[in-house]
Image: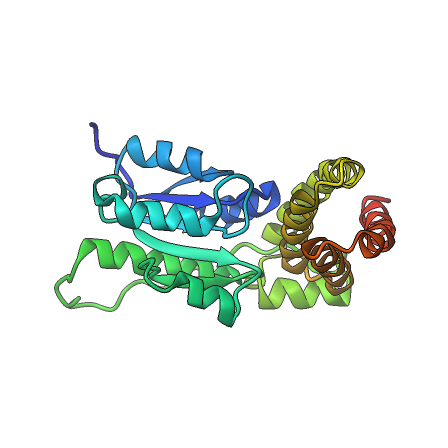
Amino acid sequence: MKPATRPRIVCVDDDASIRRFVGLVLEDLPVEVLTCADAVAARELLRQGPVALLITDLMMPGESGFELLASLVADPALRAGALLAVFSAGLNATTRARLEGLDVWRELDKPVSVRELEDCVMQALARAAGPRPMATTAPAPVPAPANESTAAFSDVERHTIRELFGGDAGLYGAFRDQALQQFVLDRQALAASLRAADWPAVRRQAHSLKGALATLGDATGQALALTLENAAATPDVAACQQAWPALDQHLSQMNRP
């Protein structure tokens, strides 16, 4: 097996917007970023070569992130020393209790800031490299990201750019543009799941939307997605039917010029 020229980072998330976010954030780091949508694809990436860090969502179609983590702990040869991290909008006391014994190195809450995600990856690389000799000269300062003007953004967006995107308006704009395109497909998928009364799918899709909307700094959309997610968890059919039109309309309005 030919080793990778750069350390490989695997992100497992069924939400295409979040996979794009991770790719955008990490594209300038000295790593090879590999993203996939489910546990089956994640294992295939692990079989193709060593991975320094695997970051997985928890609520996914098919096998959950919990099951993926458990399978890797049980199969050290496949894991090959990869550090394991979780990336979820549903981290709470119950979730963390389920993660015990799964050798999770780091927990990242969605929405995660650019700085926190970069720090997680760089610390994983440093850990994989082992101790290094003390530097005799101070490291060169890291240049600030090339920013675009924030004049075209709303106050809420400017706050999100500052708090989550490290002040990088260009990065935020690129993520927002991709997310808006993805929301068109997300609306179609959610409508189909509601028609089919597939409540686990509705819950999972609403959960994914909640994370993407939170990353955009959209508190209203995040709350609407959470309402639908909670209704589908029961499931409360009447509550789902009441919650969906408001979320659908909100997503539709986001794509209007």
